[in-house]
Image 1 (cartoon, rainbow, N blue to C red):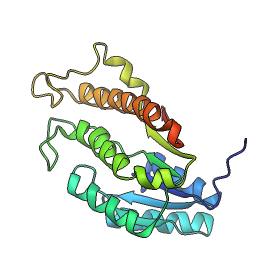
Image 2: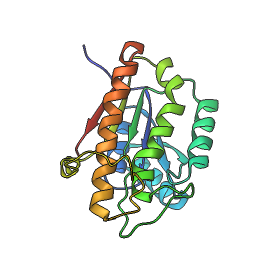
Image 3: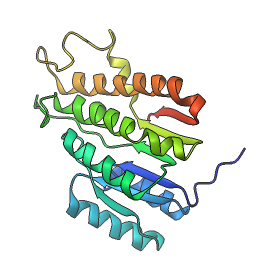
Length: 199
């Protein structure tokens, strides 16, 4: 069975730079209706212009700060108000802090942005994904998750002890993979498939 992206609604978090903007460009070129989710309006608008110049089509820009769960909720509410379906959600945005810091909501920043923000966003958009079934969720993880030898430390997910940037990043990426497996298990029979990828 072939699956054509043309005319389908796609969200790409962190779609304003790096892998994200490359993904937006190619999907737009193939006829998808892409929404760039960016925390920075200026960088987001620059990405929209670059994609338009490259493809002749213009992606939508919406502001999303994954380090602020109220921003995640506002983004999802706005998207649901304007779009009745979502064919593909690409949870691409990723960060790695140089030192321990916290999100607006008090979570360790790397874990909060890379996992918790995407976890909430995905769950808030499940209705739109169901409406577009068969639909897809793609979580960008990393093979660095292998360095989390003992799995997630559920007694200290916020890494208040023994913090290191690499430890925080690998834990977040392992959480992405675990979330992907569970998402696929719970929603495959409702037409939503989930996959984790190492870019």
